[in-house]
Image 1: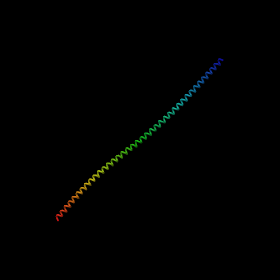
Image 2: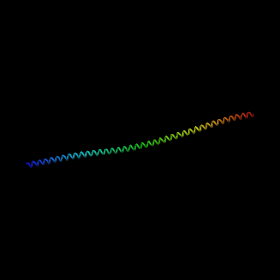
Image 3: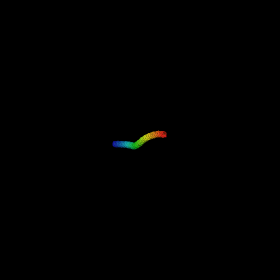
Image 4: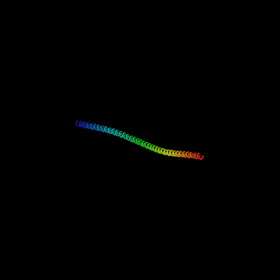
Length: 138
């Protein structure tokens, strides 16, 4: 009877040890599953962060290209405005030169008219004097 009691106690102890080992194995399985789930979440978050970084880099590149294009256009517009300004200055100088030329031509024409008038008046005076000379001689 004592032996049977010892065997029962040993069997119970073995059963408890097996149950404890089983519970420990279950606890480890749960822990490992939780660890795997966390690792998967971290992998997904890292992938999302990488995709966001790639997208931000592409956007920055697109903006750089846009800004370079805008700067190129502004430079072209500046160059065109400078050319237009230079052309306007040249046209203004040419108009001034022509105005001076025309004023000079008008002054010369006026001098010639005055000289012609003077010559005409002198000729008229001379003709009158000749007429008087002829009249006196007759």
